[in-house]
Image (cartoon, rainbow, N blue to C red; front, side, top):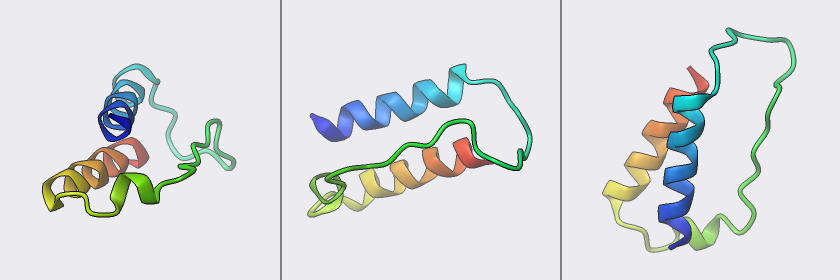
Length: 59
């Protein structure tokens, strides 16, 4: 459940936040507390999808 919520949340951020280029300081920072709950034993497909969404948000 945590993983599904996190994936949905990151996708929503990507879709709704405006493009700001490459600012000197970030306007929004997200820390994954208890990230081991998300990634320990997770299927490779899921980890790849999380990585893809994070890369899209960072680009």
